[in-house]
Image (tube, rainbow, N blue to C red):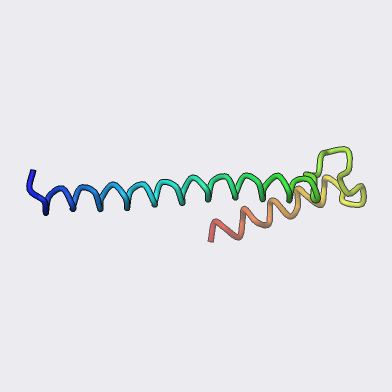
Length: 71
């Protein structure tokens, strides 16, 4: 292999390794941030739903959205 070709392959491997390392760290950071946010803001389940909103109101708003999107 010529020195120019081997230098090109070496540069390609370093570049691909750098991108792979960065993306791996990005995934770990995203997962960590998701867990931190989930710890401080847990998801709302059905038992803690707002009791002042009736099912009829939800149905009316849903129907209005469906009609609006059909336009």
